[in-house]
Length: 113
Image (cartoon, rainbow, N blue to C red; front, side):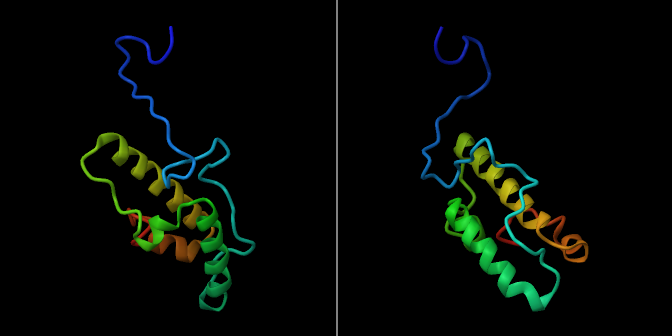
């Protein structure tokens, strides 16, 4: 049998690799993308440059700058948006030192971070 099993409640979708919702099997919440964690104002510019470059290459910069806003009513798009938002949030938070991390740990969207 091909496709989803009859009666299965799972929804299978294919996401184009150019979509901001595309994640690879190698993407995970614990990935480190910057050489030095965000410590304070003195290293913010270097940290921001490295993180921006990484998110741009991974097609996730729109979650930061607002060009990929939260999806509307379409359940599949909304779930994909939420999944990617959590992933990018994890990438940002893991690259911050403890004091900075504690100030953003309850922020829901990466745009707000």
